[in-house]
Structure formats: structure tokens, C-alpha cells
Amino acid sequence: MGKSAPLHPIEASALHARRERVFLVLAGLFLGSLTMLNILGISRFVKLFTLGPDEAPWVFAVAVGVIPYPVTFLCTDFISEFYGRARANAVVWMGLALNIFVVGVLWIGGALPGFEALDGDGAIAKDAAGRLPVFFEVRALAFGAVVASMLAYLAAQLCDVHVFHFWKRVTQGKHLWLRNNGSTLVSQVVDTGTVILVTYWIGGLAGVIDESRPVSGQLLLLMATGYLFKFSIALIDTIPFYLGSRWLKRYLRYDPITEKNLTEDEACQSSAAFSMDPSPATESTKTI
Image (cartoon, rainbow, N blue to C red; front, side):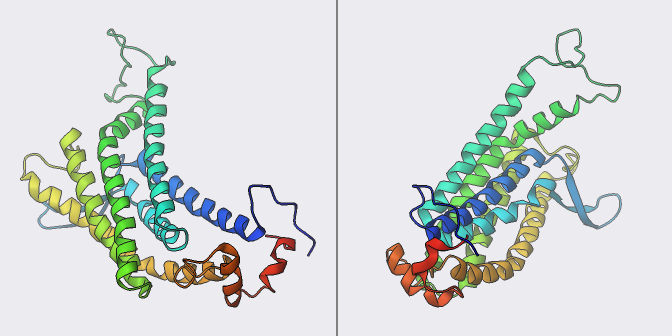
């Protein structure tokens, strides 16, 4: 293979550039999944199954926005493992800023004049079915759940990072499955409970909660269903987390347990066993 293009001055070495690109992928996947969560949110609930009599069934359902959400916890676990707590927290705070940005765009998009028909009061006219144009329905749903989303997201993600590093410290870096599952499962309790309760408190859950029946039981059922869904995904993502961590140790030439206190040059030298490439000394002449 030929030599790679010259490095930009900000890239201290080819290995450093490789590590930063992996971080960019993980952070991008995290923020992209988070954006889908905010846009889709509670726009639709997926009915998993029902139990009980037809006249008063117990419905087990999850919001569409929940589907990509477990990916965010897998990404923060990878970032916590290989890049440390500070970077993981930075990505979490960036996600909060992205939440605010998305809401701002939705607000501006609805505030600016458009081509929709107006009613006698100058408001956007509804169609024959009594519904607003699609954008405004999505906007209303996003605004209705934004406080719940932000509170749940921030509490859960910071909890995930904190618990991950707690178990990593307690086990002295051993038992990867414990910090992966332990952090995600605890943080999902915080997330699920917060988003359901706050969303209901702000604007209700029309079409999902039957106000003619006891509400507390239905809310608990929604929280239990959402948590069980996330619990199952968390157990399943142990496999990609193990395989991904094993591959990243070689690809990044970095073992987060044995090399956490070393400089990059020392880490490169001591991590040579994790790579199939020749000596790290020739890394700068290779194509990344």
C-alpha cells in the first residue's frame, strides 16, 4: 500500500487520528439516534400485545422513539470504556444541546409564515378530519414531550456513565458484562419512569391512556413494558459490546485497563500485542 495523505497538524499521529475517527463515529451514531428519538418520540405507539378481556384489556406498548434509544447507551458504554468519563459526559451534554437545537428549529419553522390556509382567527386551519398539517402535528407532539425527553435523557445518560465507572472501579476493570449491563439497566429505570410520568403530566398520552379507568395502573404498565423492552435490548447488546471492545482494543491499539495511566507513545508500545500490524513505529506511513 502507498503512503497515506499527510496528517493535518491537529492530528498528532496516524494512531491518534484513527482513535479520533472512531470517537466521531460513536458520537455521531449517538447523536443521530437521539435526534430520531426527539422527532419520532411519542408520535406513534407500537402495540406489542394485549392481555385480559376485550372490553378492558391491558395493552403492552412502546413509543416508536424508544426503538433507536438503546443504541445511545451502547455508544456511551464504548466511549466510557475507551475514551473515559469526561468524554462520555461531554457527548451527553452535547446531546442535550442538540435537543434544544431541534426544538428551536421546530419552533422557528412553525412561527415563520407559510402557505397553509388560515381560519378566521389567523391560526392554521384544520382539515375536514379536524387535524392540523403534518408538520404542526409533529411539532405539537415534540413540544409536548420535550421537557420529559430532556429530563429523562439527561438523568439517564449521566446515571449510565456514573454507574458504568462505578462498576469499573469496584471490579478493577474486570467483568465487562457487569458494567455494560449494570449501568444500562439502572439508567433505563430512570429514563423510562421519567419520560412516561412527565409526558403524562404535561399533556397526557391521548389514545394510549384510558381516563375512564385507573390511570396509575396504566402508567405503571407502560413503564414496565418500556423497561422490559429496553432490558431485553440491553442484554442482547452485551454481545456487540464484547465483540466491539475486543476489536477496538486491537484497532485502537489501546487496552483501557492496563494502559489507562500511560502516555500515547507508551500505550502504542505496550499495545503492540493487540495489533496484527507491524511495529507501531511505522504507523505514520500507513493508510488508515
